[in-house]
Length: 134
Image (tube, rainbow, N blue to C red; front, side, top):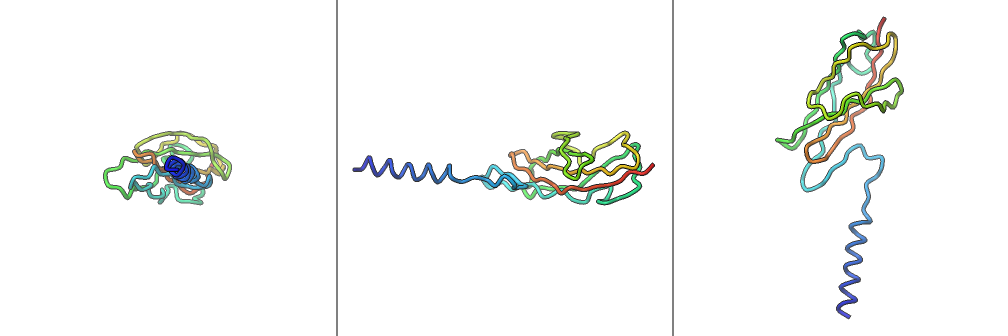
């Protein structure tokens, strides 16, 4: 009887641990253990919805911090011409800016940042857009 109760308890614990799942639409991910996700990237430059942006030698930039002092942040820069950009143009970079040499004239570009800390936690930033000039 003791063995039966032990097995039953073990099954409940196993089911409880494996029954938890993360919503696939989460914009943050964490490994737990007291670590916090990075803050959401903010303050884009050029500003969101900016127009007539110079298309040559453009540097995009953003702000981002982490609530856990001492965490190292890295960034994925994602950009494209659709409102849901998916092309990673830079991955795991330390800088909060990215230099773009030449873009198409009179085009709208969408971009976002994924902020990742050194513990495996991440935060997807909002999608921003700008339109280039001639």
